[in-house]
Length: 317
Image (cartoon, rainbow, N blue to C red; front, side):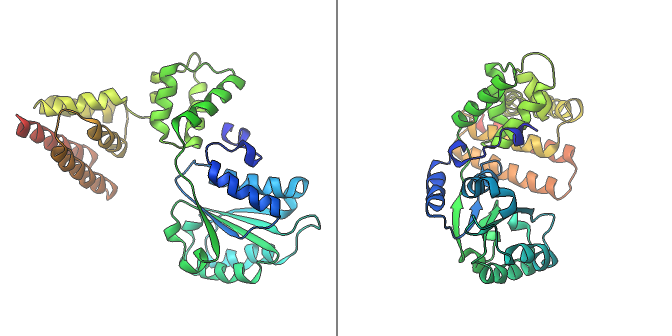
């Protein structure tokens, strides 16, 4: 996978998170660090920073002194009492001041497992430092948060993602058109991992990577198609809007959740309705999204949303 192939092995190569990298480099210089929590959206460099920090600290003895676990797979109290406790209790190699245990997706751990982990972190702090990686630090219990230094990662900027995509496409000899790059940026939402995966998937199709290729492999509709759908509904052409919904669901094979997410993005950008009407439509979109998550019928719910958008258009007239 290109994601692993181009993962930075040093903090100097990490993209965008300059303030966080600067703070982590102080730990490397001092050869000392507290327990850490890396929190933020997916694909923003949390795991990369943890592994790069370990690489810079340990060098050639990296494999002997670092253990990586995914807490979403191994999230019970038994794992804390066996593999985690066993690794944390033993000393590392002579050239390493301590070992590092990277616990990915730690916010998926059960409450009992987190309580057991709290005690392990306390009793083994001389031999081992923990790096807990999560999307939501609020799901980590307070006793663990108080023992850790928290680093909050933000979504990556478009220019940083674009720079990395251009570097990879040059090495892999992939020709990406400007519209293809913009389509990748639209679909990744500040997630570097997703952008690289889209690029790799699109590269499996021969020829230049354009917007059509990107939307084909991501299973998303073009933004202009969603804008056109909203425009038709606001003009009062309700049945025509329903036909567009049928096309997105049955011909393009999109899921109702994906369509709702794109409609939400495009409603905010509409310049033909007032802010008060945007507020009402965003509220309606959230309600429909909740119903879909709870298992309601996609077609009926999307038709209901189009009815609300059409009614909003009639109110304008």
